[in-house]
Image (cartoon, rainbow, N blue to C red; front, side):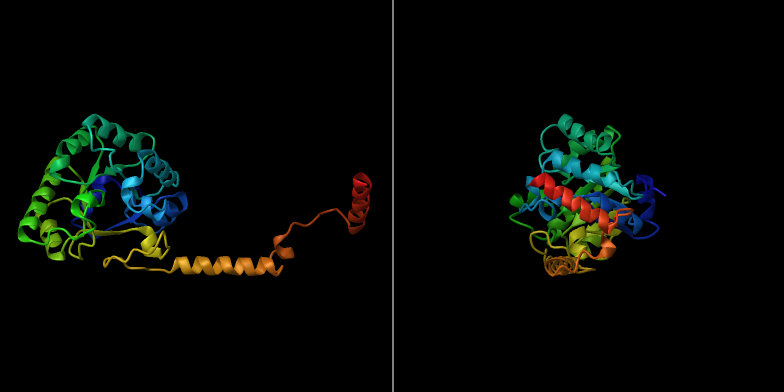
Length: 287
């Protein structure tokens, strides 16, 4: 059964929520078959798929291209499209237009954007256009230059209080959930208790309403290099397995072990004598 926004809201009081990034058709299929609740087509694709150094370089059109690939798989998961840098930072009209593209053209179910008080008017406008919004607080990668890098947020009582105020704001504005990234677990726990919408953590400890990881980190598939963040857990070593498979392919081809007759098509009614006569005719033509 397809996961919906109301279902995600209900899950806060029922069980932990699972969210995973996906950027293409086969990954979307796999995540859906695993019965993950939410697919996030994250702007992290800038790094893990496109090879950029950060998330700031990915464009709206690139994001839309990958959202479309994910939704073509018709996953049962709720599909959330990450709004890339500068797609919602100028005017409300431009932000709504870009969010609507993800819904109309991309067939996503919701959008995600970073920030609290700075994005208040933007969030209100998108929700007014009947587009569900997932918030994102704490370590917001699109703000890495302002933050001085990827640093844990909310480490003092004052900063933790500011995070709480922003979380309450997102709830009040009508966000159906939020990602909380890179904050001390005790702070994440308090925020989760104080708001009625689900908080999905990444580097926010265990006492939140759910967890999200980047797909390539989880399966151990290198992008540029492994991300060595403390919160990452690898459940497979796919990079090494893929390299080994490629090495085996190379070895078998070079030694003419592959393909075998099993991997080749039979001639059907063509006999060996037919082939000999055909070769003779070819020689005549070429001579």
